[in-house]
Amino acid sequence: KVYYQTSSEVGHRTLWIVCVLMGLSSLAFYAMAMRVPVQKRLFHVITALVTTFAFLSYYAMATGDGVISHSYVSGRTKHGAVTEIVKRDIYWARYVDWSITTPLLLLDLCLLAGLNGASILVTVVSDVIMILTGLFAALSKDEGQGWGWYAFACIAYLNIIYQVGYKGTHALSARDYKTRAFFGSISLFTLLLWTAYPIVWGIADGAHRVNVDIEIIAYAVLDVLAKGVFGFWLLLAHDSMARTSPTI
Ligand code: RET
Image 1 (spheres, rainbow, N blue to C red):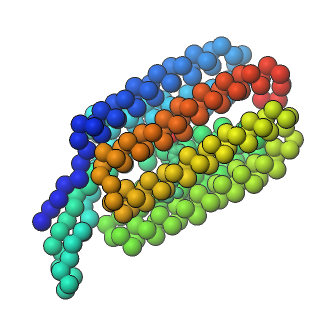
Image 2: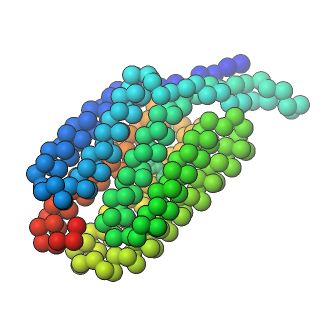
Image 3: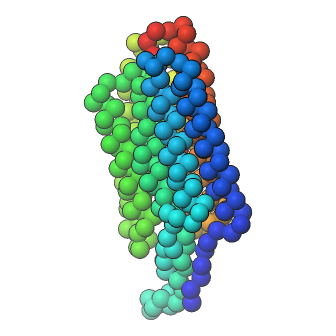
């Protein structure tokens, strides 16, 4: 027996809404970039590129690209013969998006903290490893193997937390008071949001406990917060700090 798990109209509409929101945020971020002198545009450019990539990946998903129907075994007889197969939609376009946008988001945080080049490189490479092992986890045919990939991704994620959280906080001591306070709040916001991704993944893609629509909505809310809200917060705070502090 074969069961299909695909998105319905609700998921489809959600993908379009996020696509439009990411497009509009990108336009706003490019406009904000134009309003500051070119030397102070680095954060604006990084942040605008993040939502631009997200716009493209949501356009792909909303129009039915970047998705495959992935089979996994859901029932066996007690002798091990397969009796039930589920074919569930996996949006691999997300991982293409994340492999480019999460390094850029981390670059925002690393530059804000004033982290050294070696630590920035280690952070970015760990992040790419996290996303690619996450993609292998999603596409894995064998449940045990899939959770193995998931474990590697989690180790990479812990290293990111160590680099940005621990090393970043050390580097931050050379920064002015406002930057230190701002880094504290935006990095905590990031930590909480980012940690929700492996949880959603575990419940939806790993354990298949929720349907594809719920999965789309959960990632949609997280993506809007981690890219759009994060971006507006960072750039508005940056503009107000740049007026008083010459360092960023
Ligand atoms: C996966 C699954 C494997 C384990 C871990 C994951 C972490 C993903 C993260 C994604 C962050 C995405 C963001 C998107 C942009 O808006 C790949 C889900 C640890 C942290 C911030």
